[in-house]
Image 1 (cartoon, rainbow, N blue to C red):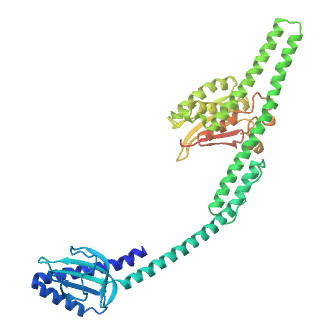
Image 2 (tube, helix red, strand yellow; image 1 turned 90 degrees about the vertical axis):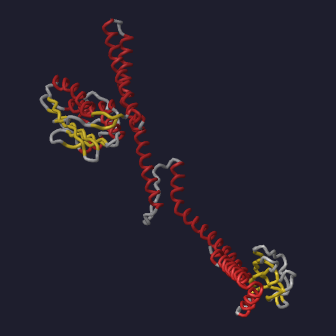
Image 3 (cartoon, helix red, strand yellow; image 1 turned 60 degrees about the vertical axis):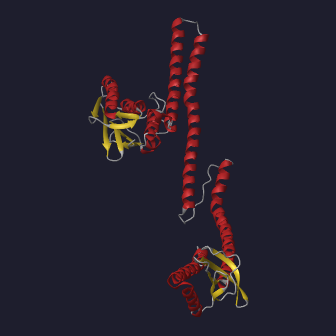
Length: 423
């Protein structure tokens, strides 16, 4: 841009002046012929204060009629062409930009300007631009090196943390500065990811321990019954009872693994392909109809508070199972004569909320905080049948649908609020 605005501007000014001179001489030729052109050339040379004007006007025989050149410039053709050439002017050579014009009867004129000073200025400008480019390149390289060192210094803690994590130290976290810049935001994201991984690893370890602990009892019981039947007198009733107990224990184990698989699918998002528009109110009525018979058999009441329609997008089967788990828990821990309520409503801009309330003993704040963990069972429910996976599945379904599960004290009883995202 600097070259175009300076050296290019000089060239354009020179060309414009030569073109104007040539057009003026053509007008003089049309008005007064050779005499008019000669007078115009003489006048312009007389007014050339800077001494850069170059003219030569020749007759058809090649004799000079006017101008400050002795002969026609070398390499210049009289065909309205532009030429850079070297001319002899007053005994000295000069670099010139020349424009030639040929008149109709053999007369011709060359109009030029001495561009030696402009060429020197161009050379100085080119040299200055070259030095500026070299300097700018050096500054750019130095700046790039400093920037690289600064970036490496800011990323080094993250790299060291990643290396420590790869070596097995999952407790390491990226240290944060007080600048709150992009690197700190990257560190916060990495720390959140590492916290999530740490929780998942703890969950895997906890699940492994819980599986080993919870399944050991039914497996040992089934084995003991089968050994007892094998070593007994072989009575058909005893053998049948042992086989029935073994089948029941194996069914319990199968249910545990099935629940674990459903939780894993929900947490991994594998069931999102089954998402479809549905009327959640109709799904809740179907689930409530099934559990109403269970409540009636136990002398309990199941109340509904559902809107006529509740449109959303989700997995119908998983939602039904999650609500079924909440109702099953509520009915299981509510004494005879108690009440269980199933409510649902649309939340403005937040999706849907499903609430199950009971009048049972409820949970302590410590137990409510751990209720979503796999295989967790409160001390008061140890004697109640179950595997401790019901609320874990509900929580996984809620998160699959962009929501969460909240357990609150209903005074008396427990209030379970299942919030689902807008889909």
